[in-house]
View (cartoon, one colour):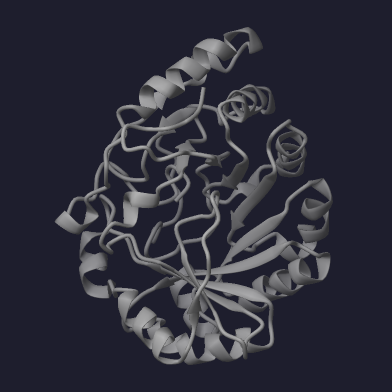
Length: 325
């Protein structure tokens, strides 16, 4: 049994949210801060173990632990270890806002984390504060340096691209990665249920940056089977790389290779467009594993060919923190 959909796409990459809580107030995601909208408990380590075992037997080799902010869970390091020790899981990674990074980077590395993505939307401290609602730019950057020092296979920095807010930072970012082995990833701002006005004001296509990179002799990098959606570019004069995530580009979904499970145990076939399939009742006992696998496989056949964002749809996602971005 393998995770292959009707369009012959193979899914070896799982994004697992372990909380939807976040302590930042990013203007493109939770401008008013996190407010809990449900009474459900987040997945326990026991439930996570049963879930990961089933996905591993279906061919999953890479797991990204997401949130909200995953490090807000006190058992975060234990969850990393639990997943890393699962047979067939080759790579455990995470995405973090960096709040707890400088203190725990080595601990997470020792627990089995292979690489890490840190959200840094600007290299200017004032702009960082304006976007995130947190005046801790230097603390987050100390965390990025701690990850490089700890020996992670790859350290990535995510920056949501926004017209008039941080697009002028490109030159500064390029200067930074010239001497730092960081993969800098520009992510197009995405429209959700609650940010239509913000999206219309600040959305900027990544195609303009791609054209600029190609003009400056940056070269496309070969994509591996369980890589994420970024188009990655390298340059012989730079230690770092550039990744572009452009969900509004043509054929973006053709190479989709990832599924999502929310912090309360719902399987989401796409970041956008559907309410998800409840798996939680099948996560209580290991003896339900075969039924769990059958449910995942059957649900996958309902996955659509595209998220249709280019048609102006935003699906049912209230905000990016709700199912792990």
